[in-house]
Image: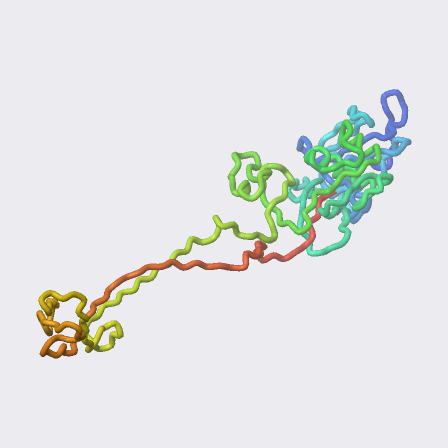
Length: 341
């Protein structure tokens, strides 16, 4: 249900009787210091006025509609000097035919600067998209919205985020820049999820600071879509192996020296013969005739030497890959972020 107030469609004057040209009319939730309250151009409460609303050159107030209840108003001249300030102004002429209604619940009213998610893509009355484009007055040539309804958000953004660009540079105030026909950039949430600032009035939690250093700065953006692991970030990997070999005898071992004989060639003569002592079985000392390659009067029986081998070893393993970046995006559904005018 909706109604209006006596100030609607009136002409306002300064103390000298001059039209209050360019005067500013603010609307607040009744009983609060500065919580904004919407004023609308239509009875269905869909087309919001800017807050503050700027009076025309003749000091006229346009037609005003409000949700039923009480509101607070403040009227200033173009320089901000207060001309009128009244709390608990009754909204009269409810659309249901009654006269008034209950007080407005401030928790249900969207305020300038509020952000919401909407399952849609286009223009949304009373809101603009957080797309990094610009807003400003009718003569500003702003790319997202060039209309008087952008005034309240222009002033709000100018004051709350000094990093938002203003065409031609920042002047003395948000109102001065708006009146000068400048544009201000909107917050750019394209492709980003929203997260709470790392401090929000408290000691920084340190949760986001590892990903970007400005986690306590309003509007800061960080994170990456893809990430390539550094060597220090890869998993630690190691491997080992051991081998043991042992054996003796003849069966199954190619390392045995099996069934062979030793031939000796005389290389020195001492009294016509010399003796050779060979350790181990099957034969002991033998006498070798000179210039012969075998023992005198005795066969060298075929014999073998048993060999035993044992050992162990170790090794290491390594893993190689392509070194390509991997996706770093959580499962996400995309919608449009809007900010309240």
